[in-house]
Image 1 (cartoon, rainbow, N blue to C red):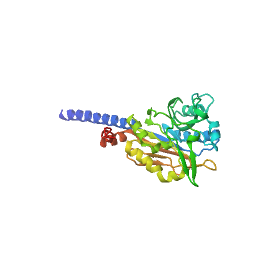
Image 2: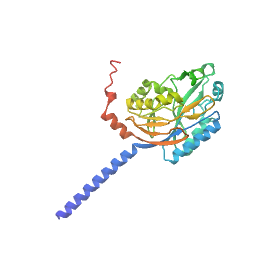
Image 3: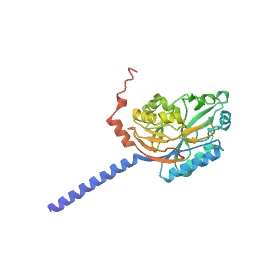
Image 4: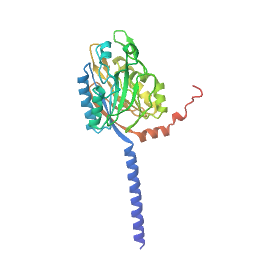
Length: 307
């Protein structure tokens, strides 16, 4: 009789712990997601660039990614400023537009897309200028968020590179709230925004778990600052950083650094593509992020009263 009671008790306890283990395992698993990062090398053909993007997104899907991230200027990089304005599109409509093609791509593959930077035309912008707009599409192809690049890149490095975004681009006026996605709450930024930590801190305060920096970084600044800036933004905000990048020669005057990268909330580089077109993947673990924030609650220690 004692044996039967013990055996019953043992089996009950075993079932309890097994069920608890399954619950915990499922909870942890639900907090992990795979993402794909597409490194591109675009030119001035929107048709060819989309074919390249399509193949990369399909590869992300094949690898099991819930979301694919594309770089700044994933639509095109023109040879001349006036050509860049001429090729821009109004993204308010999905019909007969490049954005519509991306919408169908997301829907067909049932994957979320981060379109890191589209050249967006807006009738209200002065002097025929355009905007550099980061768009998020869900798995049904619907727009879930967009952001106009706030910090525009003007640089003149003698004998190396001259780029003046302000010649043709209107700066954004607002910080967009983080977008809730299956992989986490995503804060939208673009390239040069990385040098201004105030915007990333604001996004963290609004609930961001992933900060994005889709980019077409120049080679000199890329060698000097790309990785260290990405890791700094990850550490100070305790967020994942996802930075899809352009790479290689776009035309006779424009070359991008590449090195698409994912950094975890502790500042560790967990995925990197060096200097070629292709896809890398990384796991987003929100439980790990929460653990870091709990163990070192730096945002509870900020002193807005003194700065």
